[in-house]
Image 1 (tube, rainbow, N blue to C red):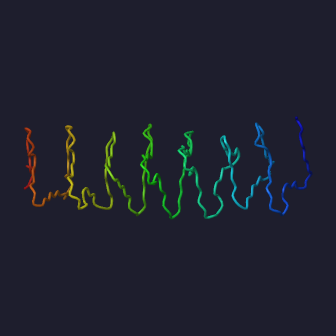
Image 2 (image 1 turned 135 degrees about the vertical axis):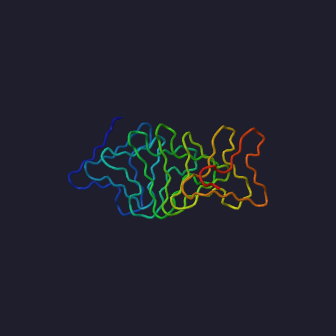
Image 3 (image 1 turned 90 degrees about the horizontal axis):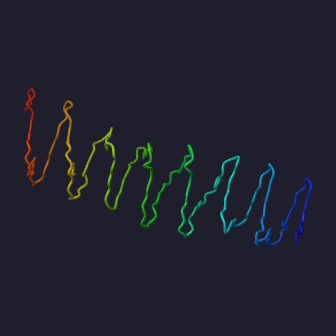
Length: 231
């Protein structure tokens, strides 16, 4: 029936199963719609386990705070923190799209790896929506992009590659493959070099030929300048 049990105490402690013997302590029931509520006032609610602390549910598990930050692994203890590592196909979501919500991922002197697992999968970083921006930065160390297949850069605006402290190199590796610039079948102007002061242009070849404007179309070819003392 509707039998109830009420246990009250005054300002003293209420202890349940605290005797110094090895024993299990169970509170609540898993039958039907049985519920369990643990409450505290403005004091701290503390769960302390000398071994594992395990929370299992057949429904959702939520941890929320209406008045402070949620902290996981905030103690100075050098052990891993695993989220969503169980061997099941699931979606692991961090953050939300509300207002100025941000996600910060920090690391010390160790590495930060994203989607580095040895499985076939796509990795996407950034958004194509509106004025979304993406910035990749390094300090004085190298920034390296490595692709086991094709490396493709596409933009609806300009693509620029600049250096304020070193040479720009394309095809600087000793790999015997062609280098194509502007070979897409579209009418465009391809410009190499500039007319600023002592800017120079060098074209080197090995034992192969140099072919300038040798394709089978009607076109003009201009080499040199008629300006001033140009030679």
